[in-house]
Image 1 (tube, rainbow, N blue to C red):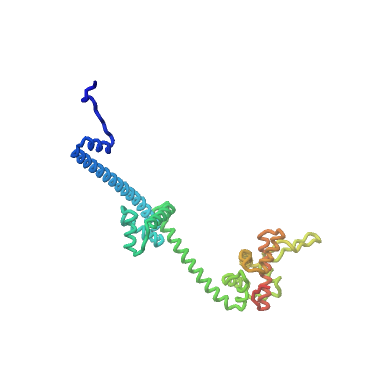
Image 2: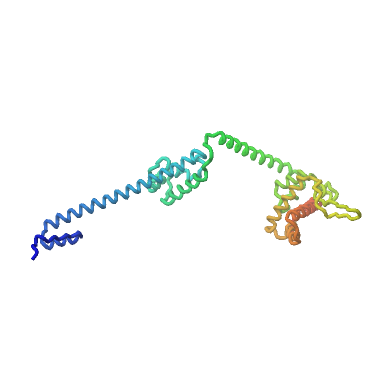
Length: 310
């Protein structure tokens, strides 16, 4: 026989330990044991919550630091005011509150701008700011002389564009005094600017005796190639006339070709399709269209009639 004092029992499960104490009717020990278990579980859960909150806080701080760097990059190189208004508001909030969570930013946004916004809305705008920051990284600092030079050039360019637009308005106003302005402008594919430019180069179209003289004036007449007794009158265009008028007509032809499908029955567009079906080159077709446009404009001005689709 083995003496009883040599036997040891080990219980590893908390519930079984409590059941054993109940079986031997150690009531006070059960209460003390359960009290220790409750305190231990409470402290463990509290520690886990603290760890989670700490991890979330560290994550927010890390994300806020990265977002702040992106905002500072934009501010240093192109300025925050270059951002769209909705992104600018979020950028300012994040800059003033680098450690705030997304939920806190939502509350701040609603309080500051009296607008409701969701957590995903804040996150989406911060991601847009990140994309802008990635694509706006220059090779020099904002105080570099190259930045000032570029800014000055941009200002000069804007001023030149403004001057050009003012001159265009004056040119159009002057061109409208011509009795042929409305006639030419009625042609589908010719706007007010092109009408003004064309009148400026051609002047009074009706001064030409026939359309062939007008075509020759623009240098769209074919060259004559003679070899012995053989004469070829279907060579390339002479280009001896007004090159600016020729360039304007070429642009008009391109516009008609691009937009002709929106104007069914347009004679120039149909003429282009016919030449294209014959296998002619694109630029050769545009030259032929330019000649046809001149013939039509000459006839319209001579007869004082506007453009109409038959």
